[in-house]
Image: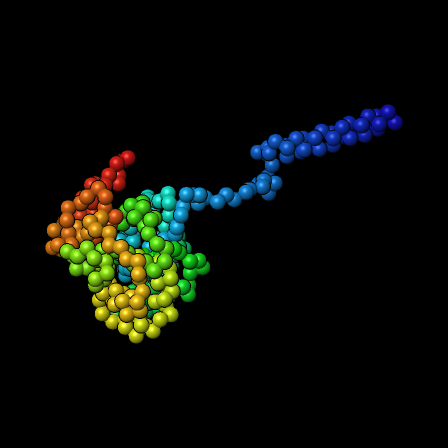
Length: 286
């Protein structure tokens, strides 16, 4: 009887040792049998070491333009830049309908790419001023550049980044200078299709009384007037002919599609979008 107990005790101790050995062996080799709580996960920095600057693109649109936003998410979601960290956000004023509060809440939860400004929806009554002046107050980080863009423009992100790469990060005003035939960026202003300001100018718009007291009128023209009145934007760059209106839509601001395009404006119809996307082989792998 005593011998049997000794054998049982020995076997139990041996079994315990085997279990301990198995656990230690499994931990050492990261066995998949271990529960997830035993696994150590190291988060990696996914940004490219070659990225040299950051850009926020704010697409000014309207709350009810659901289809256009979803389409543009596809357009910009399949693009990237090796030299710039580019974020694309959709910008509009306060929501006014019950369905907007529900549907747009879902968009925010799913995509987190919407900025709602404290204003009444408008085109030339201060929305662009509210956009720029609000950003320093609500963003958790600064960007090197901020762009205001329309929702009927196709922007090619990598060519845009390449064109910005050699330019100053300070006191910069970039876009498509108006009037259309002009090549002088220091005359008049940049078209509202899509223009870029360096972050210091965004902060200046938010703090200066010059734009604060002059917010009603053609929004792109106003920006040029603010900068001139404040003696700002010593660095100006008009990216013609790489930025233009879609062929045949706007006289001398339009020309045929070219390979070096940065932005094509006035894409109002689906057949125009199809033409542009086919020209640049956006879906060439399908």
